[in-house]
Amino acid sequence: MNAVGFAWRSLVRQPARAILGVLGVAAVGALLLDMLLLSQGLIVSMRDLLDRSGWDVRVSVREIPGRGGRVPAASETAARIAALPSVKATLIVRIANARIEREGGPPIAATFEGVSGQSNRGAPITAPWTVLRGRDARGADEVVIDEAIAKTANLDVGGTVTLRASCVSDLEALPPTHLQVTGIAEFPFAGTNEEGVGGSLDALEAACGGNVGDEADLLLATSTSDSRETAAAIRAVVPGLFAMTNDEVVGRLQQTGFTYFRQISTVLTTVTVSFAVLLISVLLTVSVNQRLGEVAALRALGFSRSRVVKDVLSESALIVGLGGLISLPLGLVLASGLDRILKGMPGIPAELHFFVFEGTALAIHVGLLAATAIIAALYPMRIVSSLPIAATLRDEVIG
Amino acid sequence: MSDVIVDARTVGRSFAMPAGPVHAVRDVTLQVRAGDHIAVRGPSGCGKSTLLHMLGCVEAPSSGTLLFDGQDVSRLSDARRSALRLRRIGFIFQRFFLLPMLTAAENVELPLSEAGASRRDRQQRTKSLLEYVGLAARADHRPSQLSGGEMQRVAIARALANNPQLLLADEPTGELDEATGAQIAALLDRVNADGTALVIVTHDSTLADRATRVLMMRDGRIEPEATR
Image (tube, rainbow over all chains, first blue to last red; front, side):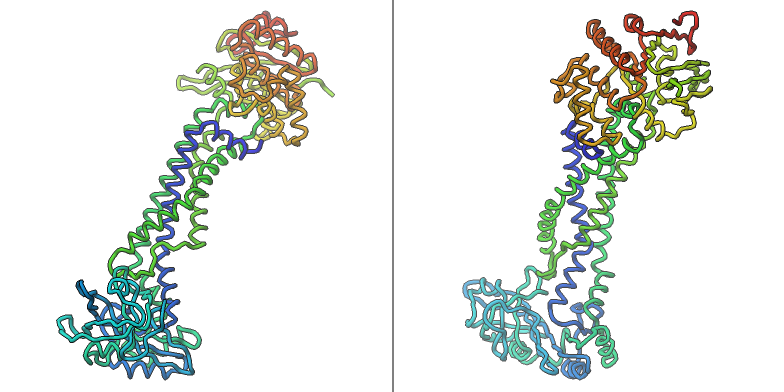
């Protein structure tokens, strides 16, 4: 019987202890997995979200796009950017607050994104939304709306939406504008409770009564090759603005807002791993102390020191391994629930996830649990390896 | 080739205690030869078990020289001593020390497995050993399903697993009633008759009387005048 088989029998011998250990590791392992997913989840999710948008350089007045301030002379700036040989296309994005009228209820607050694109060499222009049904809005009297608005205002493709947009100040009292709904779309950067309307810059201007001005909240660009070189070229032609690649945006977020999640997850990971080490170490130590006589007898019969050490290590590995296996589905279910709760925070894009499953996180999870199994077994391994055989046998008989 | 298995030359064993060293065994000179049947008797605490543990290479002497098959035990590493015990020495304990989660057959198989015997060899040897001790029908029983005498029989089979030259027994009938003790004594006689040297530490005079040599110990020494 090898060390693993022997360890398995030892576990089965004391099922309550084994179950306690396995469940403890499962709970700790699930938390550990979640902390690991959390530590990188936002970064991975944000990078994915940015990459999926189809634009690889973002130009704004702030380091992190979307944090206030507008790009002045947007048309001219966009044109200068579009003229760069490494730029395939540009998009002016202007955002306004809108109130959508509906019958028999209060108006729906929404964010109206107006865009205007310029393409070089026939490159496609991707709007910052994804049309789910119908088609994209093209004319000055067309918009796409999200599912929530469609449902609340009882609208669908082909219907007419009545909205009032405020482009300069929320105090504006503009007349309502009637726009045709050409499609139902998904706005990946919209918050969970944020409704979205999208259309051309002309449509937004019409809704704002011509008060848009030549300003943009954000300019987007796609590169012909390396986005870093394109961003550098953009910075050279528009020196007062920040031109960031998707990686740079993610990197900046990592250094600022997202760092809290990493710190929290690092602290909680340390706590959970320490707890697992203590739990397994205590269980194994108690177990080993209960069978010192047997261990001494095995040693007297010729079992080597390394063999009895392997038995203990295998027992630890089995408890942690079984618990670790259970922790994976448990951790994923827990992550899904926690993700839903965290996404409920205001201003969080609906498509952004706090917990994202990644191979690296799984590898670290397995590595940390393996380390837990080894570290937890160190003390009980020391007990059996340094066990005085004769004295223990004598004590067992006297005891 | 010499038939001396263990050659103890003025061996002693002392333990450091807060109140000063305790000399458990003092200047014992003893040879155990192939086929010997030795009983060690004496009052509690006289050093019988310590001597047995030294003869079994569990403990190295603090003084003197102990040779097992010509090898100085004090100079052997722990791993070498373990290997020696595994293949050349069998142990029987007063409290049997069978592993409760294993069946009788699995308990017997353990030393064979540790010695690297193939699965087939292990199974064959285990079967024949359980037949030898009269417990073939109880092979699949756990220790908790066996009587004290049966457990000691399984322990004897386990001790014989790797066909040792020397079998050491520490109070093998200490936990058994008289009749069961007599059965175990008979089994040990048979083991000895089949060629395994036997050293038994016992308080049981019936068991000691079956030995060809009886050593009396007092205060860590063998009393020559009481020894036969």
